[in-house]
Image (cartoon, rainbow, N blue to C red):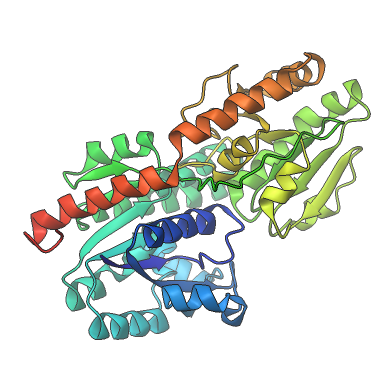
Length: 406
């Protein structure tokens, strides 16, 4: 099949959750023999120099970029507030992206057009006007739930009021768009169940897949255990979770284990975190290779209290045989079993207890990591997941265009 992916950010380089998930799907589809073309937004929040994309990748995907300025504009935000339209979605509507997409659709025919994340559905009218392809939404999250949880945790009344407005308008848009696409590819089973309750559009859960090559090797745990977190810090749930952990949990942990270190990596480290001086806390910033960073450390902490979808960095840590301590929200979408392949914690004392267990119970770090790696091998094989996706494409496509998707 010939497939066009519309991406809200560049899938290359695959250094954070969204690009990693998009890139895994692109390479998986290509390995299965399908032709994939990519149209990606290049934004001020996630900017990529097109010339830095490897020539082989550019050639195999015919990747094309359009710049979108996602900076907050007060007048536009006020206009959306008064009109009741989703400001999140309207920011992604862009003339350059529209013109380039229209040119692609006029020049080429596709069997499938997949909107990566909700925000690229802002171009659904152009797709329907210029293409007969089956259109799928690949939902990386239930977007409005992220903002609902952020609003619920906000202490400032005015900020909470505006965040609630953002959540409600985004919810209205998100639920409305479910009926306008031909199929929905959810990234977790839990998300899929939510979508099924709100639409008759076909839905399938296809989580993030790992491509285990024959030469794949696990790097041994470091001799001295430590803690780590990796994630984009311009994503509000990550920043809020780490701030809570440093304020509430780390003082007790570092007092009990004075030699322990906590390594924080990720894009867009905020100034308050870079300037923060806390015993044992090491700010790594953006790292060139996430898996290399993960393999240097022992215990991942995921203090996430808002968000939706699946945490790809948890899957990568489990893939590397590392132990993970997470909230239930953080571990959503992964078929984990508390105490077997992960430790779950919801408050300060539970995080402290979980860290203590891993640092004091002999062999637990190793055992938890081995069970985690086995889980990912069994449930997140990219080859098997892509096979399921292709079958879904065909079933949905044949409903719309009989015999065309055979």
